[in-house]
Amino acid sequence: MIKLMKSTFFDEKRTKEALCRFIMGSEKLSLGEQCDLFEENYAKWQVRKYCVTFNSGSSANLALLQALLNAGHIKKGSKIGFSAATWATDVMPIIQLGCVPVPIDVEIDTLNVSSKKLLDCKVLHDLDCLLITNLLGFCDDLDEIRKVCTKEDILLIEDNCESMGSVYKGTKLGNFGYASTFSTYVGHHLSTIEGGMVCTDDEDLYVMLKMVRAHGWDRNLPEKARQKIRSKNGITDDFWGRYTFYVDGYNLRPTEIGCFLGNFQLPMLDTTIDTRAKNYKYFSKIYDREDLFYPVRTNHIELVSNFAVPVVCRNGEVFKRVLSKLEDADIEVRPIVGGCIVKQPFYKTYFENRYDLKNSITINDNGFYFGNNSELTANEKEHIITTLCNA
Image: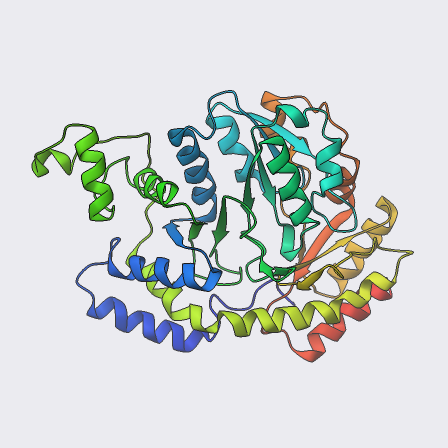
């Protein structure tokens, strides 16, 4: 079978050998120096000032929204727009934290929210925040979306868990919003098995994220920030200061093991992204079969970096036939992330859909993706192309 992913890591044998040596030689495996180093290294790679690591990309989403709530950027009852075609743990924290989720449809030819779709949103002027998903290595006109958000006083944040390394108009995705989340889940661009990050250029948010990650305390803060918050709260004794909880928080900490893997894999990241980008250009030939599939427009994106290639069929009949062909050809496929989230049972428990989400529903009902990993052989890539184009 041609699986979505072949290995846990890029250069797996060497990575596992290095991991074994690290574990055997380490006195501490809970959050420590490797985590600090990975945050510094990844922030440089992403071209952001700050990075905070977490135990998953989903935790990064939760922590970011909690940090924004703690800092007063949003509040209970705030309306938060989100891409209707996304992953469940973009939307779940919005509900869990007492905010109001507002689904926004995507464009069928980019699979992402556009400025037009944002402007078409019925409650645009009431939105307090927009959590936009850069789905599967793609985006729409993010620069125009940012202009709309600035004009309407909407706080823009990005879920970039699926688009690490993609470049739009000279800027890496994940650098258009106030903050952005990333995932290092196994099978994604960079694997720490489980893991995630939030990147931002705002020092106050960076400090808040550190507290949210670990119980709401100050133990992992830079010394200047620690003294500032202790002074503000009248804490003068380090004995109590180490166990004072200042804000709502969780335990979302990563481990030294995961961050060692991040540090070890990071120098290989550009190589894997380049391979995936070349693979995608090769696979994009399938969109020439416009009688079968909706074309995906990427001429506005300088570099497409994804870990899976989406395919949206023209109708249900084509969808069923293509899936049968892929199964016979032993090619693994999955739905396009979480599909249209408003159709998921957890969402319908709380809300009815009152919005026009035609494209997201089409993606949900007639879409799938196959793997784009850096270990695919030429024969495997040709087998995928041939199977799809002759379906």
